Length: 394
Image (cartoon, rainbow, N blue to C red; front, top):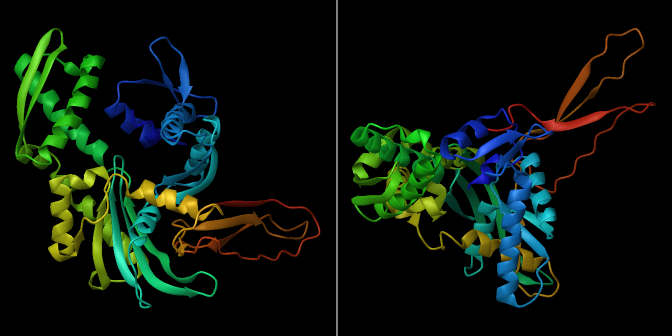
């Protein structure tokens, strides 16, 4: 479960430590210093292989529904994904037998879905796409405006202005804290360490997710797990107030992506027409309350399908790449969220001390597709390294 949190991460990373806190699965280090997961019989699977199995299953569902072969795919990814994480997705897609047409940032995909049924004016209209997902919370400031094209007529220009995120807060962290409540209750009642029972902890994880969904609409939920561990039946009640108190330190992080995205976009909250909720965790009352207090009730919008908006936007984007479909004239301009730099050895005389030069090529916020020319006065071959300016992630 939730294996995507381990994509392209080193075995000694914080992501692996977090995964060990939520999953009872045995993990091991690969020859590439990445992560593999072990089955009970000892067979190991790389993260890319497991995600490829998910893609393969999705492919079979699509083919069953469409009654024809499906080969090409457009995949949505969080905007903060590094090139390594994006490569891992493309590798998994290839292993599954599919072909990647494009990777689209999920906030951008939601914006495409939002624009399909709406018309805009020449003056840009700004909205915030607030995506509370399983593993993170993202906010994307998007500008929508009308554009004229001689061939395609009136269309919509979608311009991503700024992005903010927190990678350690999302549905998984809420589930983990709710499971801790259940664990402490069980141990308090039965004086046994449930953490030593892997199956019991796995069942409590599933139960925590179910209880979280109930608490989204109710003030109290009843947990009832038969023979949880050592033949003990577990039953308890969890109040929403108890759950929210356990997550009180997360409140600032719920809204931090909004503030970061606005700062990156260079606009203030007064210039924003609405904040559009998407993502499964956006249904959590505590997240909605934190956002409401930050942006105001009048700016909250629930006019896209929280579960399907991103994938529908990806489908529409995929259709626009094909000549077989006629879609609404929508032009998309996205941005990069990391500083990209070039490092190379300086040209010096044979007696001079070697030194390296680092040049910032594309600063954070650069429009994707931007080209830049660098000139080097060299007579010999030399090496140039392209990388992120450290630290490359928040």
